[in-house]
Length: 82
Image (cartoon, rainbow, N blue to C red; front, side, top):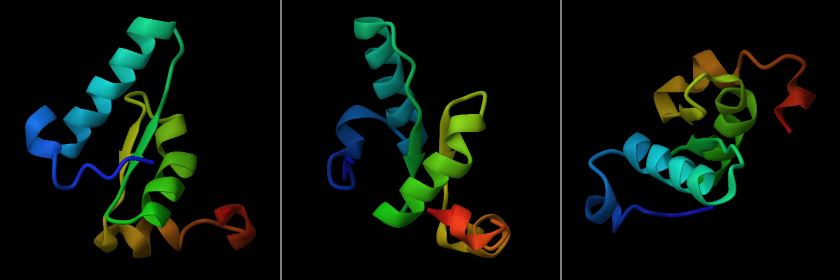
């Protein structure tokens, strides 16, 4: 987990841009693919990673509080949340 809230402006314009830069650097140095979940807290970032980013062509998912009714509540059965 990375909290880049205070330093984001040093590395990228948006959280998604920073995530892509990190993913690309990991690939460049290791030839391993990576994915990233972004959110206002660790829970939304992790659930976004597990339920969207790993299946996304970009490898990045950004879950916001307003996404909860559409993305989080649609996980069935709810035990799959974890």
